[in-house]
Image (cartoon, helix red, strand yellow):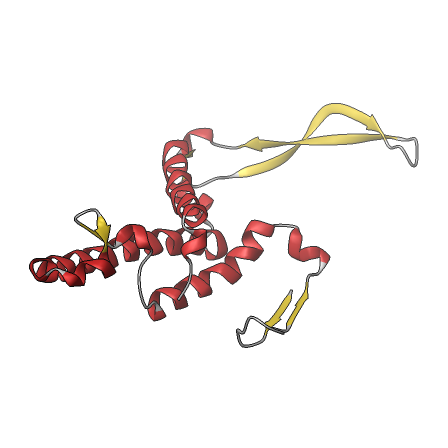
Length: 176
């Protein structure tokens, strides 16, 4: 995949996007490589927060400067709004990092897995040669020596999904 977007301007912004067939094989993974660094940069360079975070007394933060008694409250609440937006961005960033760079399935395997291939008593006919061929099965040598934490994996996936849901919810607020 190659993406080239010229400096932002509304008229005549040039875009060149080349997508190869293999880019869509695991699209969630491919997009995570693009979205993650953009979220990191947005968090670093942001100049504000979405409107719904900047509320004081039920009114918009900008409109409260006309009331002297709101001055301290506005500053305190704006700091809280910045922290709340950072928390949401952090959840998004964590989720996309997990998708792009972490083999988190392996975190939930415990113990040593030891498998071997054993010849089974079944055969099948090779569709090309029409000859009978042996089949093999995978046998766990010691099933009590390892286990998989399905509950932990489910919780991990739920946390990833939370960040993805927040990304979807605040998609139109991802501006600098």
